[in-house]
Each structure stands twice: as structure tokens, then as C-alpha cells.
Length: 411
Image (cartoon, rainbow, N blue to C red; front, side, top):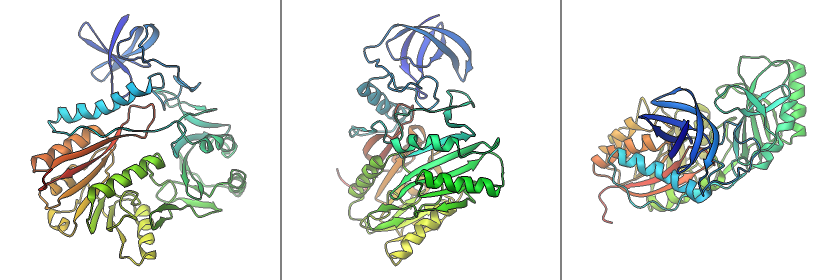
């Protein structure tokens, strides 16, 4: 069938309407006319296969990676950067409008550069190390990647020889200040033989890893620590646990830290909610109390705080979905930073809405849940003062942001 692409959806597929039916066509752009073939029903529309672009957009460019179209990681390498970034900001604007949230003019989008991402999850089995194919559980050998740091791509040949037998692993690779930190996470519970353990020790040495661990994130088994992984946040140095969540790029993390420091201003005591290891609030010019449910992340942040004497940084384990800080507890703080997962922070924002907190910095990885929570805060008298889109997931449909909510202050 012939389809006119009118928009790009949140997954990065082109959208078309024909005879009252919606079609999702990958690797297409707004304004294009394409030939496509129906595949299957998907949500409220129909997934289609692109056959040919008969009238290309002026914003279409040649994808830089030879794996584009096969790899499940990138959906939009064929889109010119300025139009692509405008679309990403538009995803946020659309979500805010749908929830009736009044918003200021956005600050310029922070755009990720190619080969900047410092974290990756690779699929590993004997003779294979790479990513999943698009829309499939099948994995393939990655020979090049234009998203992650070159040192992560360079690790792949050694990873292919690290697995033994028919064991399938995920390799969670983080680039820290002291080198690569790798957690090999088996898909099924597995006990390493002495031979397999020795093979992994040799792999860590040959690849110059800082640390290599094996197992799930809750109970990783250290294989070898050649250099203790460290991350510096101002005067705070964190020794992160294996497989810890990091902001995808160091530059975006630094931009978010700078925005947090500027927007919060002269606060003396800040609550960092859904804090992880404290990347946004630790090492800033205030006392930070971190709340996080991940046991290992809390232990790492708390250990860093104790080294400073406990006056600048402390961490507490708490499930903020089930047990948010109450309005009464929030009275101990001058400002709040929160960086929840994709589900957002509905319960916590309900408590913030009834608190006396004057300034809230909210980092989000999902415009929909952010807009829902923003509506809660605005209904309680908060004003969305600033918003900066952040593109940490280059050429994907994901967009992040950091925003400032203010109550009781004049513009």
C-alpha cells in the first residue's frame, strides 16, 4: 500500500492514517510517501514493513552505522539532527499539553554526541557479544556502534571469548573514573567452575578492566578487582556497586548537576529522592540526605558520606513508591531533588504537593509520567519555572528532562 507519513511516534516509527486505520512504519519521516506492507496489529494500530521510500523528506540523511535497521538500539539515524531534536522536545510539549500543564519556553535541548554513552548492556554467549535485533530476542555480533564510547565497542571481541559452554549472559558495562566496571549477569542461575573463573580473570586482565563481577545485581560475586571503580562528585567520591545505574553520558550528568545547583540556590539541606548513588545532589554546596530503595547504592553513598564525617552526605534505604516522605518529614528540608524511574513519582508528588517545600528539581526519563506529576504539583500551587530537554539516548525514541518547580516566589 502507499502511505503518507504524517508524524513519528514515541517508539520512533513513522505514523500514517489510511481509511481510518493507523499504521506504524519504521525508518520513515514526516512528509514522506512510502510503499509498505501490513505485518500485524500493534496496540491501536497496525505495524507495517517499509518496502520503499518513494518521496523522501529533505530531512533524511544517510545512517552512519552499518547495523542500522537490524539493531534494536537505534530507530532514527536517518533523521537530520535539528529536526530530530525538535521532535524530541515536541514529545515533552505534547505530553504536558495532554495533561493540561502550563509550561515555560524550554531551554535549549542538550544533545548527546555520537560515541558518548558510557554505559551499555551487551548480550554475551560463546562467540557472540552484541545487541538484540530489532523487535526480536535474537542477538547479533556488533562490529561497530556510533552511540557508546569506543572503549566499550573495543571490549566486544574479548567478551566473545569470555563466555563458556552454552551460558547466556548480559554484560553490564559502566565506564568509571578508574576504568571499565563489568558485571556478567547470567540469564539462568549458574555456578562458575574453577576453569571458567580463571578464564574470566584472564579476560579482565587482557581487557584492562577495573573490576569484573559475576551474578545478579543483588548478589554479585567479585571475580577480580584490579582497580577500585570510583566516581567523583565534587568533594564526594563514590565506589559504585557492580551494575549500578548511571546517567547515560557524563556530560549530561554534569549539565543536570549544574542545573540542580543553580536552580536550588542557597538551600542548606536538600532531600534527594530516588537518589541512586546521589549523582545529582552529592558533592553540592549543601547537606544532602539521599533516599533510595537499592541496597547496594545506599551502602555506597552512605560509605562516601561517612568518609566526609557525615555532615555533608547521608543515605537511607526507603521504597518511595510504597512509603514516600510525608509532608511532615519534608519540613526538615529546604529543597527537594527527585529522579524517579520511568513510572514517575505519583505518591511522592502527592506528599510534596501538601508540603511547604519552596523548590523542587525533578529529573525525568518519561514525559508522560512527568506531566502527570507536574499536574499534581501545579494543582497545589507550584509553578513549572524551567525545563530543559536532555537527549541521552541518541537516535532512539527516549527523551529525558530536568525541570524546576517553584512555589511562593515572584518571577
